[in-house]
Image 1 (cartoon, rainbow, N blue to C red):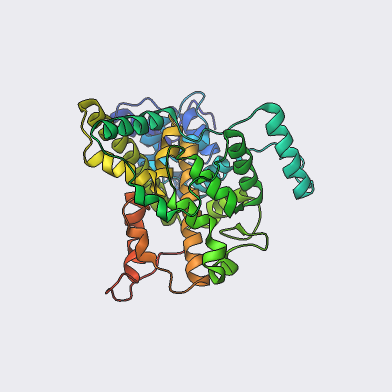
Image 2: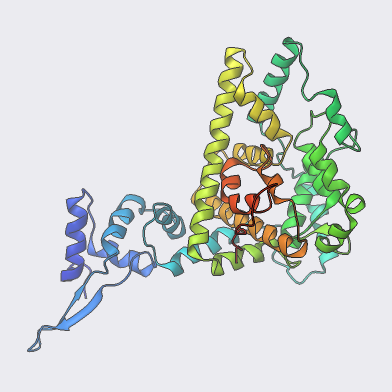
Length: 395
């Protein structure tokens, strides 16, 4: 059938779009269907006496056509369009949504991907040489975060205060330990992708490097001393070479692809919304702190910033500021990474019964949207709380 002459069913969609101010053609409908963004029409009964048969648009097509008219266009990648429609809660075909999430993972590349059969140790050596030769580095503390840190320190000194208090160093067994360089960080990050693991030492180095002006880093110290302080737990969660692996040891991208293919759509949606909330929280906190700095007064926002910078929520602040733009593919990767982390918590709960999950509710340890997502787990064994429902496994 010529795309210049729309079927009666397609004409309904075209007229629907027109009533909402969009110009849609039969050719556009055909292209969207070929890309899996729009379902086909539903065949109906025959007209009789050789006059052909009828069809009607799938009910979800009417909303999808409006979304496609808003987002699709020349040069737009179909996977990005699918994710934008997913973001709006539109009924994109499930197969297309999953393919878009998988495609987002596939954009993560590491030197040596074209030689996957290389011995793992040799590949890591080659990767180190490549990073060294190319002078590759990873941004540890974005400029905006550095300016905020420096502004808070300046105002604190002017007011005769110090942060953190001297007693803070008592919680760090090695407060003068060296930190990772930007080149070290690039290698550690790339190695974590291709192995799906990271050594406790590297995690500690990275945490310290992300807060280089800190006189002490108790969270990094806790990580570095896990093997000594909690050997039973370490034996349960670490590999033989003392690396942390939140799942089977393999390329981290394979874990994310598995989630893209198998995680319930409601879990993908929940994670998508949560990482969006984390980004909004981080940018809002930055803006609030900057307003306090401009006014020359350290208030509630600066207090929250300081607590987060010395705890795990600070990593979300830095990650957000590194990503000035946040395209749909990055949004999808962040959502899958969060699902992977949630699955890791569930596996840890299975391996080490009696974990003090209520500590995740401590301010600064988790970004507020993630803390809210984990409320069932946090409240399950809180002091004085009755048993509740555990966090849902992320497949």
